[in-house]
Length: 443
Image (cartoon, rainbow, N blue to C red; front, side, top):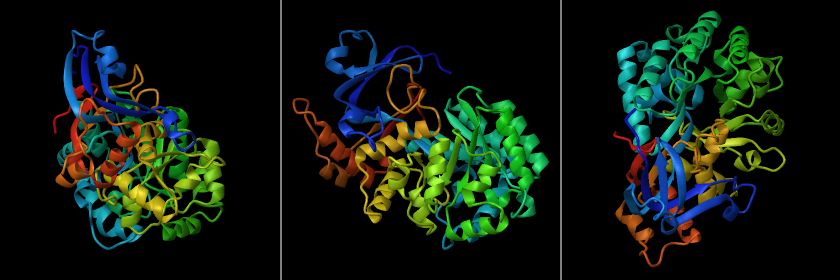
């Protein structure tokens, strides 16, 4: 890591400090139209108005991003790094899509050098889009996981990943066994979990590709290593749900397959949840598990509309983060993903505000990953991963989001409106810079 000294950043700052699905938005945000963020040794030392803090930090070097909005780094709670090159593959729904495109592509990741090459491209693409932390599927081959972690470590990133585990209902060239997946995963946990900023997620692809024996061994790993994650898919597609019911006739639904194996807990993140029943929402809420809401993927594969209003209800509150789910997802951009989330909410006669979307992309994602003590906003002591947004990055966005002068800075209502337009219209061009532990990322 480079030697870090105290440094400052001047810009507009907006972060969430509470869940705006359950409280007035004005109580859930901090906004400094002309603010100063102070970073020391990669962590937040101070945040406040520039006017109030400038004298206190008169001697530090300040990067001037006035006319930009700085927000906490985006968190992607579900994505597949081996699917990078097969993004936007035509024409299929989930199960056919896996067989036609995904499995042949993932076969290439037996080659460690190939995995390193794609991992580098993948991580650069995340950083280009302002994503500073992600929960990542690698491939079934342990060397693909090593390659991913090596590239993430080189960039000093806070990343969570795990080797895919699947011992049935997949081509032979992608299958492991109940025993080999246990042994290989245990070795990877011992090597990478809590190494620098890296964390491990035990990663069965989904219930259909694991035998009961493999699920039992996964549960054993979670007992042996209680602070790792469980990351898998859940109730994405109608045919998938039917297939799971047929494969596990003793279960009382898709979630119950995981529950009977002991895989539903506070550090469990389930991708999609489009087809969940009310009882399953209640169980996820009780277990404090999280859902990765992946709207671009759910629309692209025709899986359905996630019931965000159910997940964020008072009766069955569930932790929710945004997931791009590349390669079924159609963009690495959390902005594009939040835009799709807004449209999904609209189709369900719901509203998703800019502040709610920002929460899902930052503090909500951090809570989903049990990392709210380290990430998600600019509280003192948290890791200084953040994004500099250009709200006028294209001609049409410049027309939509008028510039303000220093004597007439935007109100919270005005900046929320401009953030909303940036969510709906923005992409990687809106990311002026991405910072990791206070250092500007190169990509």
